[in-house]
Length: 106
Image (cartoon, rainbow, N blue to C red; front, top):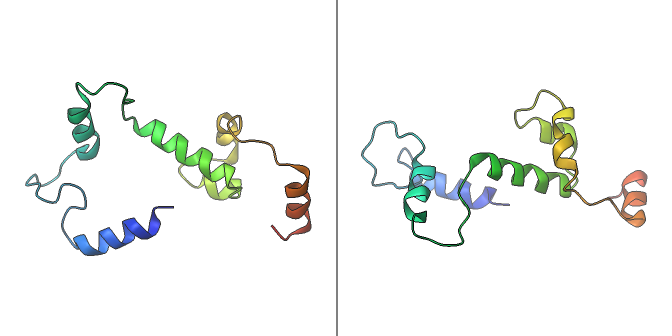
């Protein structure tokens, strides 16, 4: 859902950094996670930023939107079997939606 916004920001950044454009480091490592970690100290109620959690949220959202599993698995998994732990977070289809998908007019 952020594709257009990020694509526009990337175009406007050109060869510069998209995040923290004033940065001087030639090859920063973990720039976003380090920045979030620094601002979170002393902030109550904010969950710790974990890239694995972000990726999991993204995968579950794709599955909830019924993106084909082979497409979702292309996000770095060897096969669709790697999606098994995420399926528990995806609601079952109601009968009407199931029929639409089976009939091919989703």
